[in-house]
Image 1 (cartoon, rainbow, N blue to C red):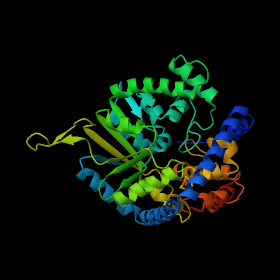
Image 2 (spheres, rainbow, N blue to C red):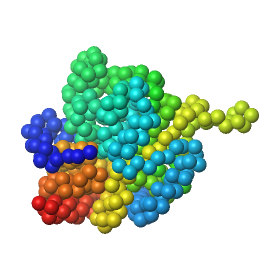
Image 3 (cartoon, helix red, strand yellow):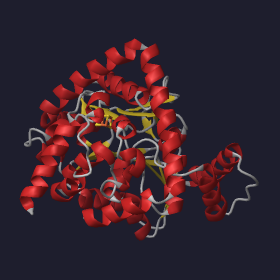
Image 4 (cartoon, rainbow, N blue to C red):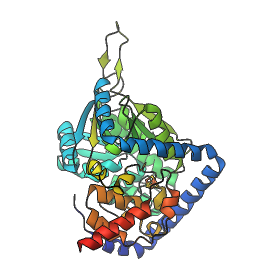
Length: 398
Ligand code: SF4
């Protein structure tokens, strides 16, 4: 996947002039910042836990290559089928081969899927594909990209969201009731999920010791997507691998807390396809849940980033999106300030790792170097220093 910083600058300019975009961002940023600050002030144990998670992620990245091998073996042991995708194209090819064409595919929100351009690719193979996270569905209906890591439709007002749902899903909605909109989407998506051939998810973490995937959410769409269709495919970036199941759950809790979601409504642990041994102890795969679980471990520049002392630091990122809401630039641009999938402080570094460090560096010139992102990051990533590093790379290349 390629992208061009100049085009991104043009889109940023358009976003700055878009009053509705600015109004939606202003509201969402204020609400999110206050919610997380209050939560962390009230529950100091979460601050302690995030220090622990920072240590877990640091140790994981230091032994990442070994963890990838362990995870691979553990996935096989629980009857999941693992794959290692070197880049975005290979990930698309593997998943495209598993899905085929003419299928109904439902997707749970996944930035990794956005990173490899998965939805568009599966559609190009002749599949009907639906995002099931409400924010991600709105982004799909708009034909844009996620504007925040955990809240993809952060740039939309309720009026815009309701208009999209009414016009694109052919649902009659009266007035500006968010409740009615959510109900209409629920009915529409339920109809798709129960008939889907394949469910695709990402993961918040993957435990190398057990091959268990951890997914955290509040909508319950992930539960449905990963348990209703007969085939579940999980696309998991290798930096999400941690040594143990307990480590993985801790990562998921901290990630949820730093998005303001505590307690998380749902945490799913998936270790292999569904099965039963209730008749004469004969193990049969495909009980009420999927009969096949395919796990695609995505490298796409991450293992190479291990060799750069600063880019390596980013591999600890748990995608909470805190640094985005804290950033005085991002709160006006959202992910327009970024690459094809990711944006803001964390997003520029992920773009450098997964797409192009020079183009990401050219966009990093907008960074003010205030350091608010560094101070807000639960896993202590020195984002402003890495962005300075990217600026230097870009200026040396010109
Ligand atoms: S860089 Fe830190 S604050 Fe930003 S998304 Fe990643 S973990 Fe969260």
